Image (tube, rainbow, N blue to C red; front, side, top):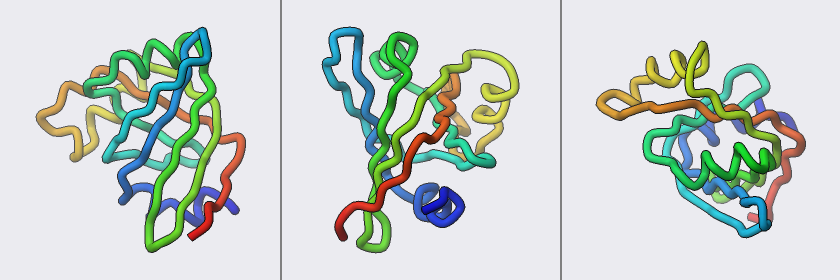
Length: 117
């Protein structure tokens, strides 16, 4: 399965984003907007504190979402950007209008797995 095959579903889904801290304690949040750019997933940091802290310590992330009665888990490594082209990108997203857009999380995908559905 390739990212392009699920791009539209991903960009229209509420997505669970899981991270872990330095003690491997999990933390999970739900986000409403992610964008696929080439072979990466870009997520806006509007109000994330613990998620950003965890990514700086441990870049492994897992995203889960459902669409059309099918689900997927995407595992990858995340990089946080508080300036530069990725911050400019998320600030330009219409979904972030009126939001703080403090940074961008860019997920480099390691695997995509279809869940039962």
